[in-house]
Length: 355
Length: 134
Image (tube, rainbow over all chains, first blue to last red; front, side, top):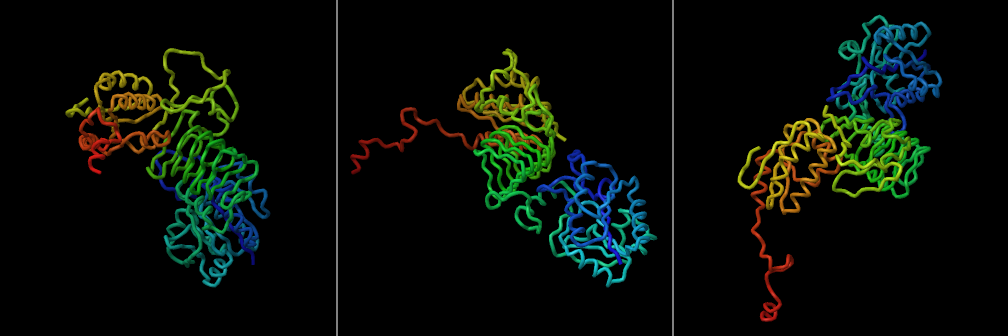
């Protein structure tokens, strides 16, 4: 009697809420929070629960995501043009290969429940499906009887509306639905506060401060616990990272900037002397959680995706050489970076497009 | 542009970029040259803001402060407010929900002119007064 798991990610599987503007180009499940994407965390939980096979079904190919699964055994990665057909096919295959029951996770639900307990509950209930729920309502986490479910109408929308012939399993442990970029912020904060069982990765250099491998923190930067600095990130002098903030991998926070109660998603570079508070930053977009607004910044001196180099130089310390805005102290640029004198003031714009 | 007694209310341009900021500054400059200029910038129309606009705002504030005046902001959209906060400019200005509130705030804090003879820390008593009291 085998046990399988199907994790459905990508467009069609997410029960995403609407944000002003397209803040995230990829599904939330792909974004790393404290060094690991949600989908990786979900898969790891299935692997630890001794599930025989885990299938990741998703609607859009992502080579980076596929590469991150190679570390797991018994995990197969499958691209499906039609999610519903892919799910039915997989349940049929499971049934034919002696796997009687399967977990099914739609979207980005992260639940720290005892999966085996959920499975035993489902078996004892003798129903075609068991759906997990928590205090806030039903979750997109199911256990299905493969033989019975393969003949049912299985697609994400129908499953969500499926009200009959299934039992409910109540989860008391930590749950994050991750339907919104705000949930990424909450997830990071919860991980740092220890509300989840998963500890932050990397080395805890001081109580509550985790620094992952390859990260560089300037000796004059101040990190206030709890905080997380991701792999290969760079925190420059006179910066402040405080109040449950996380800087994901390959980010750069430049001179004098304050990161407070914020998540800087992977590959984001933040310019000098800025205040990033109560926000999620992704490339050149900033979601202000307190104001519920997304702003897109086209001035690469302020914020940009990693690797998008402003001006001539390819030095990561670009922003140190940028003149600061009026009324504040100016850092003298090196001679080579000085622009020819011009009587007309130049536009060195923030160029923020309000979305 | 509308004027309410000594407080001037000006509508900020829709696109607060370099060229618009220049035109706006040209309009605002004569007002800033007056004694104790009190200006309210109504930002309800602002749809786009860049660093040139912010720089102009800071320059105007510096000019107003030189003449013992002030500039206050009103009707900021959430996006404008987020930009100002990101650039650490928001804390330099008083921000109000409406222009009327901003105007009222100027009138509420109108202080009488201090006599120029007294130092700022003086309580109004001289040394002779203190000696006679003891």
